[in-house]
Length: 559
Image 1 (cartoon, one colour):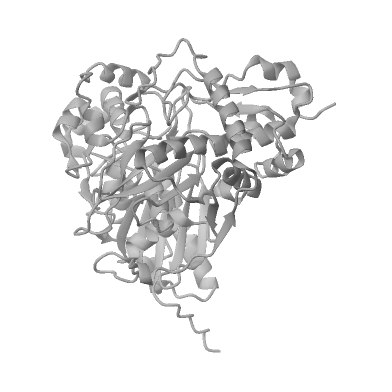
Image 2 (cartoon, rainbow, N blue to C red; image 1 turned 135 degrees about the horizontal axis):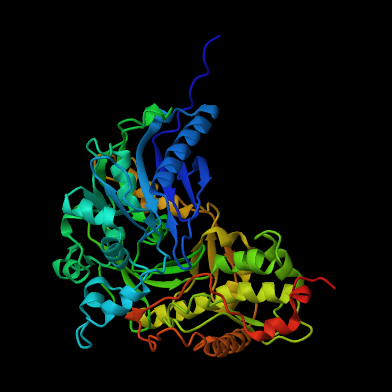
């Protein structure tokens, strides 16, 4: 019997979406932006000391291979010809730092993850070297001196890991964020792998001048990083190299496919949401919240605690576009904390049910400042508090308050963004795993007093990477012209309470925020200086004694 004919769907584009907790490979139809198939692999994190967070770069790479292989198998089962995949893009967790041996391909140390806080002492030491009247770090990078960015992590590795020191001296070491590690490995590794990064990921290292779009000599000298180990800087959409498939991988049809798109995850989501116009913004709800507003070709510096970053550069000869970014550390993480630490949820999804049962926080406010307050406060002395409790308060009210906290934090960074941009947003485009929670989305619309708009296809981060890859010169299967972009079905959440009620709740939240500050008296305070932020160990949670008065049994609903 003749074999079934393979379905012809037009050019397809794959996207590696490498996140902190998982890796995925997704395949899209470039003409319709339809997601055809995907596979996901969960990743482990290592916590060798309090505040330290690491991952195994080889496990990350192997997860990419596994996701590619399984997705190709699923496409074959769907009778879709995988030879129709014409390009592959990469989206990745930003700032996470890897150093490896260019001759063996072996990592020289575990990847130091973006939320790792071991470099607090490094930040304190370096901050003393910056003249008060000339913060050249922020003026060149758009970033506050913080534990989150790659430069301080790399400085720490170079100072403390003997194997890395030796490799640098012998000119064997290469540095990169996760995108660089993956592109180098997928294009051949020790056998001709391409050592590069794109402008969005480079802009999160604190070694990159966002004006000249080059590695900055003064910054590299300041952080004591040898420029010889840095990757070449490329645009977000061009052919970096061709796929060289591992001999163990069955998806041989991807051999020779161009790797032609690369964006840090938040920039990828901005592209995937098609926020190409000056003033368009999106908010991604994941472990944290990241609100990015496209400022076009203008590099806007914030007066209200936001970061200035590169949004994208979609081609070698295309202009660079910038964004203002508001970062909230704890969003989805607060749900996990309620599940894992307090035990009042059996699964993360249960929070929507509990919040719906309550319908209100009943005057309870939750400030999840587990590791200090980030944008717009940058206050490391803050700690998590739950306040406004009475004997009537139960776990349903606390669940509702936790969701409200995510929305209030978004309101704070949106207010800061409106002040910096001068033109208030008329609606907020959203994406990320938490947007499946309809209670959260309605609360967000109520608290912002503007509509919240969610795409029906939630994989906007991977879609952005695929769009960049498919649009690259020499690939040309995905048009980014406005008239050619596929219409996206949206779900819209309109505000359902009046502005006066919203403002009362928001002002009470801000009162709670003030009460959260100054708890960690042993930690150095930035005194509100957005240029210096020394974080505290994640996982060191202090909830006020008011919670203890209720008792763990009462919170968990046990009579």
